[in-house]
Image (cartoon, rainbow, N blue to C red; front, side):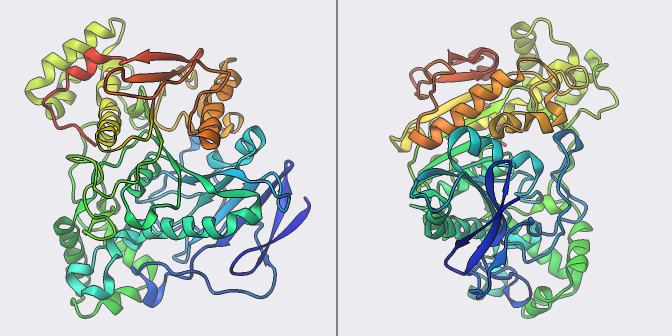
Length: 511
């Protein structure tokens, strides 16, 4: 592995060559966020004089027992959890060659609670080799460290505390703007993309004034971010945490200097803010933290009831996987053996008096579906409905094109248990399918990698995901609702599954 040295605004970094790609890991884009900087907006790193090694991934934000890692999605590097976690990683073909390659900045999943930019599933090597792009992944503050709203309790000194994790991402994008040319990238052609929580982060950045101009395209995979957390609700969480720790509102410095394990333990033992979800996923205490609509850094809800006036109208790709929820309920003891009465029992809390009509619609459109299949199909639909809501809100407010997709390819892993589940598209985007057990062993995998990764790369280059390996991808409009079905083969459909979508009319199922 050869080393290579590149200068940044804070100092020189030493990277390495891996599989013919230059890799720089753990580069600081922000200063430490512990102690008296805890909960505050980030600031740039202090410059260094020596050459800094960038050959190992930097720390993840503390997240306790919570983790976005799943053994079905491959092994994660062993990385410590530390509060000072503002680091990024870069994959590029070359430096110093004068090239201006499209830049793709990945925002990891795990909600706003957990996860890491160094997960194996996000390795940028495949994308770089395929598309001559520069890939950047980042770590930022999460859960209580990134989204504890203290402004209404402790005053102006803590303005932005409920958005600190998102402000970290903005600072990382500023770092990209100021430094990425030295790594072979074009600061004038930056695409932000992310899945699940990462998709929500992309959604919010579209409506954050401080992020405007720092990116030029966005890709939202599987989880649209339509609204922030109301400041009143966020303040309630903060007040309950302070009460549990017996800290007064004028003693926030005690909270800032509290050891990480003690703070996490206090958060984890707070009662959940939201109830257990119908599909069985508990919304635990760490899940009670998310970006706060503070009227400043996040001026309004991003896309509800309509697009924010602060909308950054750039081209976007957006879509979901057909069987999103299959990932989360694969361990259900009743999997594949669910009976009709059990299906009805599980769906009643979610569907109410629309239950029978929705089930009847899905039985009609999916005549071979078992009760287990119907449970997955129906409980997966909120994400797709949310993506459509975001797309149509953005269409009403802007002119930049939107490209919609629906990923329907099913993995044969563990006998098709995971179907076309949440996160399944990621290894096809990054060309990491051979390292991800969940993608199974179907012989058409390489063909789908060509189609999907090719589309993401084309979009990063031109703002249009069409490429020779797939049909022409028409923009999504209210008249046609063109949607690319990502499968083998890919196909463009006009307003797919309209009968199923119409069955939800009148229901508030937006995630």
